[in-house]
Image 1: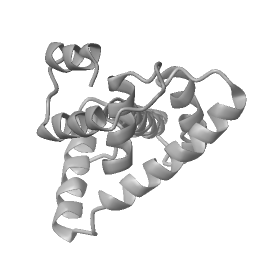
Image 2: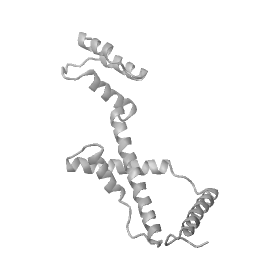
Image 3: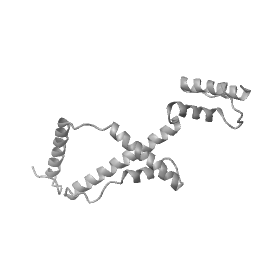
Image 4: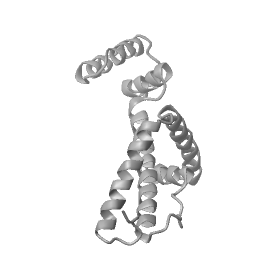
Length: 169
């Protein structure tokens, strides 16, 4: 182990035991590549061992969260517009998941190359859909009844204030 490697190991604080173990393995198996830094090698080792590296996984999580928030915002805006217009007919649709994935790839992940945007958007779409299936909720009649009651109370309150499109009592 060279002096610079041991100096780096003592200067940098690693958060987990796993990172310290991987760094020890990396230091024990030095390569001839002079440009391979310990941090880069640690990232490669973490990726090989547990999947995505932490910074990359956190950025992907942030991008998928952005997609979920934007999709929910679109749906809420459409429903509020329909309520304000007094018709139950939705004239617009929420932005598609692939469109939101491309937006997240550009705006959240900072990707500019069109080919990389498409590839990343495909991966984000898969992650969004797999996350949606993991977090899906089975039909709950009690929850549905509570939601219907809440909507009914809101509509009754709106009707008291003579808001167009609200149901009369």
